[in-house]
Image (cartoon, rainbow, N blue to C red):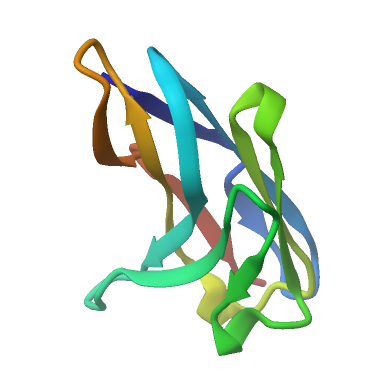
Length: 121
């Protein structure tokens, strides 16, 4: 199986920045889209940002101009630089990857365990 491990969450004040990281490990042959979702209490999980293996990025309207997604394909890692954070960005952030891997070389939609981001004064 492929594992995704996130890091970098925490508590910050409005206007501050955080950088999330997510590394994929296990038997990996290729990763297509890799990115971030978030889920706030009482709300559905939503896409924040994703990036294709070729470097094309996609953002939720609510984070455009403030968040930047990037990838290091050699390290099977995706990052999310979050600037000008707002209280409404508070959520659990989940890493996601469309990956071919595991002992049977199956294509799978892998998820990390989530990391809490809290923006509060």
